[in-house]
Every structure is written in C-alpha cells, then in structure tokens.
Length: 171
Length: 171
DNA sequence: CGCGGAAGGTTAGCCGGGCTAAGTTGGTGG
DNA sequence: CCACCAACTTAGCCCGGCTAACCTTCCGCG
Image 1 (cartoon, helix red, strand yellow):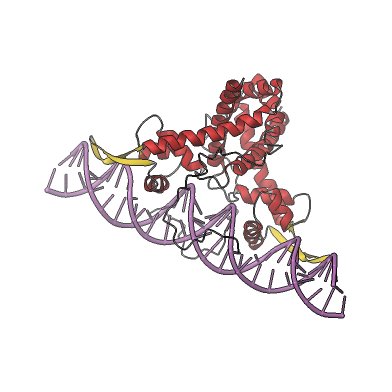
Image 2 (image 1 turned 135 degrees about the vertical axis):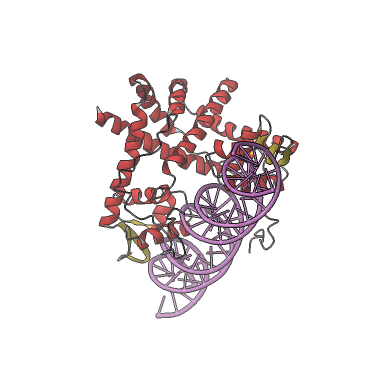
C-alpha cells in the first residue's frame, strides 16, 4: 500500500525533474522570460491590481513590482490609478504587449506540438487522459506542515557566514 | 489534425505551468534548494567530474563551480584530484552529504505521496501510464530552430538600457 | 472630526542561480 | 620546445525571489 504510493511518487518526482529541465532548455535565451510571459498571461483578460497578480503567482508584492516595472519600461504593460481607491494601481497590457504575448504563446505551443508529433496516437491519448489528474495534484495544497524536522534543524547551504543578517526577533 | 495537436499542446502547456508553480511552492524556503538537491542526486552513484555534472544539468561550467563551492563549504561534498589527469577535479558526496540527501529525498517523495493519496486508484493508474510518455517528451531535443522570427527581431525585456554590453561581433 | 491602525505599493538591499569573458594550469601533437 | 586544446576557476553581469522599511490612502471608532 504505502510502498506503492512511495514508488509512484518517486517516479513522478523523477519525471517532474525531467520536465523542469526540458522547460528550462526550451525557454533559455528567449526574449521574454517565463515569468514575464506568465504575468502577461494573467493580464490577458483585462486590467488587474498588483496584489491580485502577486497572489496568483505566489509571489510577494515587491517581486511583482519589479516585474511590472520592467514590462512597463519595455512598453508591454501600463499602470493606471483606480478611480475608486487611490491606493491601488491597476496594470493592463498595451497593444504591443498583447501582440507580443500572442507571438510568444504561439511559439511555445508550437514547439510543444512538434514534440507531440513524435508520439504515437495512443501515447497522445494516454497523455491527454492524465492531464486532468496532473492538474489535480496540489489542488488541496496542504499547508506544508511537513519537512519531518530532520531537515528542520539543518542550516541552509549559503555562500558566506552571513554576518549582518539579524534573525528577526520580532520587533 | 494540426489543430488537435495544437490544442493538446495548449493543455499540456497549462498543466506544466501549474506543476511548476506547485513545485515552487513545495520547495520554497527549504534548507536545500532544488538545484543543490539535483547536484547531490547526481553524485549518489559515485564521484563525478565537473564537466560531467555541468552537462548533465544543462548548465555552464562556471555555474556548476559555484554550486559545488557552496556545497563544499557546507561540508556536503568534497573535491579531489584525478590521479590520471591533473586538470580534472572529481567531486563526491561526504557522509554528511549522503545523509542529507537521503533526508531531503524522503521528505520530497513523502509529500508527493501524500498528494497521491488524495487520488482514486484509477487516477493513479492513469497517471502511472502517462509517466513514460512524459519522460519521452523532449528526448529527441530538436535544437530549437524555432522561434519563428517574430520574436527574433524583438529585444529582450531588460532593466536598463544596458550600456557597456558589447553585442559580441565574433572576435 | 480627527486620529490611529490596516491595506496597497514602492524602494533598498540581500541571496541564489543563470550567463559570458578572461585567466590559469595541465596535457598533447608537431 | 612550443603552440594549442581541455578542464576549471574567477570576475562581473542579470534575473527573480525574499524581507524590512517607508509612504500614502482608507476606514472605523472615540
């Protein structure tokens, strides 16, 4: 029982690693990074506020700020003020941004389609059947109570002794 | 024909994005980054040379050097000289590294196994059937001739005008 | 009304992990 | 012996995460 699950998990883990590496190779050196692509994708359906974007991407606000700064500087995205609440800034795709998104998406999907061409019809069916299952993984998202504490007491692997970093004793 | 492929590719793309985000959330804030974990995994079967590691991970040599530096400083890995060729440096896991690897792997697979528990037996079977297919993707690795040149003439999205960077006119 | 806390964003500064260019050291062939 | 190549390392850049600290704006309550 448990062993079957563990073995399957091991295989999934391996394949996932493989897919990650594949994605990395596919995306490397392209003019739009996958993060930028992802953000633009979130804007396709209309303007969004910064917080919404950050949450959807599982990222802190400052990270999204920087991302949007770059896209805005490149003219792919524009900020506006929300008339209802002066605190919030809304972001939307410019026309150029929309066009660029279309091109990038087409290229990425095209490449994947070429990969899929190399499969048999049956393999494609198998793959298609498994997609909904894969999409379900991590849907419940247990809050990661885990890391059974064997790792909990091991220090992270860092560059240097890390001098001026306070360990946040709660102000 | 073509359309089916494209549609499937679109779905695969979406699910892949989902999985990547899942992995990111899973791994965030752990004491061993996924890259470090990956490198240690490559060392499990015995000592390796730097070039071999870099190639396997699809990374340039300098990147691997830095990675190994950190792991060595943390005592998880050790460098030695190759008696047959003084140019090459071999890297291997220390005892502590081996132990740490074991712990991390167990934790990661354990978490995945918990995800899989939430699936039905049938879903697990579907997933298991699709794993070999997923593993085949990108195996042939067409050299990325693609990026149909709509993207080719668009500049990358950067932080600053990027002054002192020469565009490499082939020495 | 006014004020203090909460909420939305930005800035600054650190770190990890990529990359290229250039330097160093050790093999190898003419 | 010397020129060249191969294996690494060092230096310096960039992207993309993060936290801490700050500013502005809203809002609820005395």
